[in-house]
Image (cartoon, rainbow over all chains, first blue to last red; front, side, top):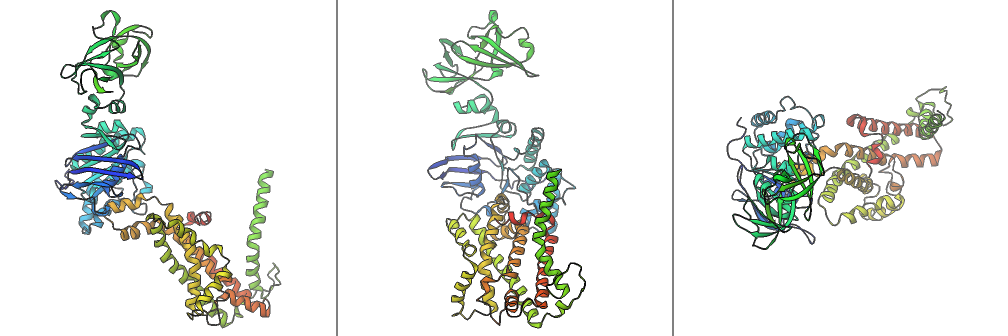
Length: 361
Length: 266
């Protein structure tokens, strides 16, 4: 379905954007380029500056430095109503005294579209978010999921340069959230709409985004595709924030293409290349639970570490295995249950960690 | 069971005490004098027929000045409150407290103060003078009412409208006003009722050319005792109040009244 004339969407560029609250730097020197039609997520813990950034882009909060451009148009000096931004709030903020159709049509009305054209566009977007037949309802008569879709339709219908979504899934129950996540992504792709999505939920960020911007304390920690963020976190914060991870203190013995890490006097050759620093530097070896290979002690590969199983938790598709390695501490592994069917808590095992990745400590 | 019974008795007594004086006036108005008997032996409309022309003129004066003062002060105080609440002006605290003054100062004092201003301006004993005096009182209450209403309304609605392309005035007209309209109607109800019966404030400002009904009744009863036409007019004031209340209630639906009345006062 061709809901949009092609290309109303714009690229977005933030350059050295700064926001202070008193002496507190909420956003420090943030620069970011978003391509037209791209879905980018600002991910981070609460207080990291992601919502502040979004509000500055929307024009709801003045920035204290830097500039914001949509395409080649500089917008940061414009009031919110002249930025042409679609905004979806966490609580949707649907106008309670207007019908679904009036809500979706509000942006069109403000732009002085002729009545007939407004109606056609409203119908198109009601269809896009699958709410045909509910045009005459008031928001109070809709379920949370339906309200959320009205809010999305309202933000898209007038052809904004950019759509901003502020934690729009956090008020939905878990099951609905998963569905809406898929729907939202499909709608965004269909409309080829540049979108900035703010969330603290890494699962949402990984599932929906073309790229994820991981933020911490007002700064960008890492920008990358979801897979890149997951497999090659650039910093300790990224390694800890996204997904489960074993972080093991070590020392880089060799860097570059064939890195080796010394852990507790043991030299482990890694399969992945390392981006972290010079030889001799102290590092964290990050190994995802599913990258840890468990083998019985007799058949252990040469550069595995010895450990003792402390717990095995059946999770359906996978078994979560906890083991204690002397000098290293607790390690977690996740694997198909059949692979560890012979093992019991208390058994001595070898854990290979060579699938891991190294970040500076 | 006993507790329920005690509760029922308590409520009945409370309600009776609230309703009794009003019922007394209404019943008396149909009997022609204040020697009320609940049997309504001699039902008559004599008290109403006895209402002289001067009363009617004064009644019309009171209702029109009360209504006009209500409308004017809300037209000023609602936008002002919006500016104070959303503008995050540093002056807000000072203004919010200053506007309490007319409610804290005894109305009689406020009336005397206004009189000293009105005399040189030739505003005492005039419609405009009474209107301005009422507005001084109404603005304070209207502002507090509106501030409470707006503080209770999430700012996201306005921000959403803004991001959709609405300028400040459009936001106010299409989003803010409709959303707080029920509360404003209740505020109007309060102000109008207060204006209808206000006495002390206008005691010195009123005069022969601008006589609110409350003051006319007062001087008549002082001079001549509780004459039947005074009872009849009092009853009419009760009807006016009830009618206005009913109109607001029908406009808003029952859920906004009863209970919300006081809690919305802020």
